[in-house]
Length: 269
Ligand code: NAP
Image 1 (spheres, rainbow, N blue to C red):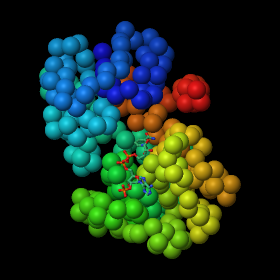
Image 2: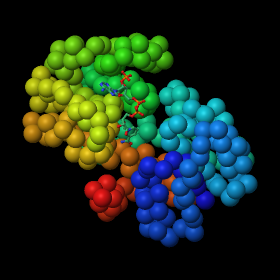
Image 3: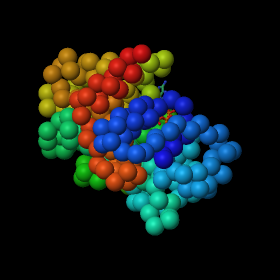
Image 4: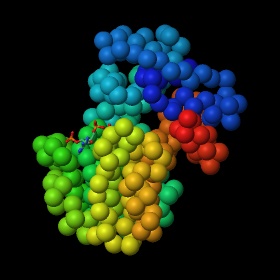
């Protein structure tokens, strides 16, 4: 049994689909846990019958502290996947590989095209994206954020590849970038729009958005209108789920068009 402690998530749908596809005798259950109850819940995870858990905000940092994190989780400073290995509670951060695996699946040769990357935002998800880009040897990552101190903190965390910048520098930076990634919540349903002009981008540039509600954000629509290659937030969501499923149930599941269509239908409700 695997638990997911927060209400708003497509994860039970994704894992439930795979459990059915692979005919497993397993349960993936949603659990809503208050922050003050989290430590107790995790300390008794195994005795409650769970073999692991996905973790959402606001528990990811507490999960890191309560487990043995791998290099990715430690570097990102947050764990979103827990599992047991010989009785030890281990953790990782699968947003990193969710992001890069989705790019691999969506845009052939994205790393060669990337050159300099521009990451919009410096919140929790930006940490996973930056770590993933550094893992894939992107040497220059301009981090553009409303609050400059948070972009500076990412440079302190990840080193000289991270170059903090202001929004006013964006037109100039887009002229140099081969990859643009939106990690802000701008453009998400109910949030202000992400108003940027993609005109300075070269025709080979790749545009990725982490936001998946709406599925086609105005950033992705503008990129596609210019004929640019894109990777969307739903793809990342699906690919980040793969490793946890494999760790818990011993089967590496596939992200298929059928699964994607199922989640798209759910998002449209
Ligand atoms: P977060 O930690 O709260 O960070 C939010 C970021 O957005 C910060 O950089 C913040 O800037 C910026 N921002 C928010 N409102 C803004 C505004 N009005 N103007 C300018 N900047 C603004 O959130 P997160 O966890 O990184 O998540 C960000 C987005 O990624 C969400 O839409 C989330 O759903 C999505 N996400 C998707 C996936 C996926 O699998 N597809 C995974 C993780 C996250 P400041 O630092 O200045 O506040």
